[in-house]
Image (cartoon, rainbow, N blue to C red):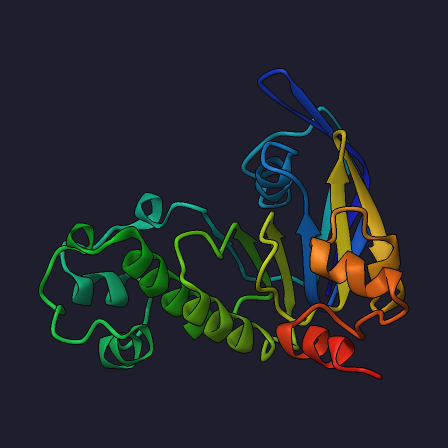
Amino acid sequence: MKIVLDRVNVMRDNFSLTAHGEFSDGVHLVSGAVGSGKSTLAFAIANVLPLESGSISRCGTESMMLSFQFPEYQVTGLTLTDECFSWGCEPAEIFLSSEIQGKEHQSPFTLSRGELKQLHLSCVLNKHYDLLLLDEPFSSLDCEKKQKFCSRLSQRTKSITIIFTHEQAILPKVDRIWEIIDGVLHDRGVPPAAIKRWCGAPPFIKKLVASGKTPRNISSDEVLEAACRT
């Protein structure tokens, strides 16, 4: 499976984004500042936004999911049980993983945004998608939930997962790093070499690189291991 962006240009309001590259199996991180065009690229790959020029080829991807930053945009069920069924999921399993037992008959909109985000991601990760596009999946989650989410992402080895985020604290192990700067998508490559080329790396990772302790990857475990090297 692969997603090929061939000299893509996409416009959104007065913003222009250009992108060229190939996404293959594995977990990809697309980083960038707020407003840099991450959501624009996600929507373009999902065929939600039309292209001004260029093309996007989706080879071998028969199923796709675009997860929005704000979970309420994708709610369709009147109750939490209905919401789980709408995703094709078994409610009992989702309630256990999202830790909202006892609220099965409540409206999804009675939850906090963090709880709703957790429910949403639990439903998304419960299903298999050849291509999973996650737009700011860490928003509204506390540190513990971010770590659990990262652990679940690491299990997605037989599909293409693209994470679009400006998260700087807790990140999953990834197979490739990309970043958007000044409206252009840059392929930084495969870790650990990619980490040295990553302009938008979190400050603590940049500090490790500067001290000669480049992490093998960007997950919390890998960063901690690098920090503890003698």
